[in-house]
Length: 334
Image (spheres, rainbow, N blue to C red):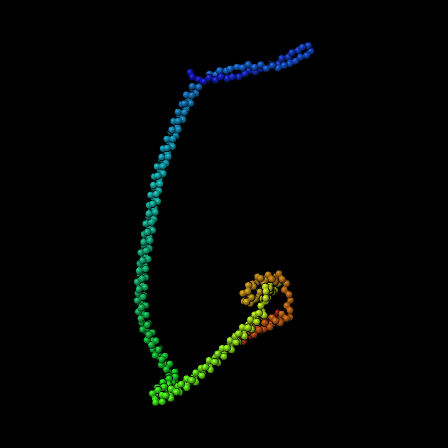
């Protein structure tokens, strides 16, 4: 019988107290006793080892069974997955193929319908083109005759209206031919030369007068430019200065029946185009106190308003409008 042997080394300790008495005195002392011992143990582990080997064999068998089962399950899953994938791919491809076939059939039907429609429209356009060509030929022939008649009628009317001029031209031509064909052609040439000299003098005088007028116009233009430059120099302000521009704006404050106040802004188009709006005017009115209008300002506004009223028409409506404007201005500027 095999086994394992173990030796345990240990020490046994024991303490004893000893008391000594000499006369009337006693003393105590503790003594420690030690004894080393060896313990020999024989352990029989053969049954345990055999049971451990049997358990290891069982575990190994179980592991092999689990591995085989896992491999079989994995193989089965792979096979089933491949079959499912093949069936899904086949079904999906079949569905896509059927869908594409249906769409192809629909598109072919649409193309055939559009082609038929285009062909019919092409035939209709060809028919309309031939009809329009025939109509164009008919209209061209008709209007050509009309315009030819109009030309002849216009020619006759021009001759009728300008008959004295035509007669004068014909008589002048006959007179020129008569002077040329007669024996007095030399006199005609001399007279013609004298007329040319007179016409040359007259033309020279005319050119001289026009040149004098042109020089006078240039003089007036230069004077005007000089005056304009002087006015511009007088108006312009040299250097960079801040300026404040006053724009005409009318602020009307109305009081309603219930006592509520309403502010209305009236301005002309030029003021609005310069960037002034109702919001800016209302803000300036609320932030600043408006001084009282002087009599000079009232007179200047009244004169300007009167000039604007004078521009109105002379109808009854314009007269009534002018009267109402004068009345309102009188109440405001009084």
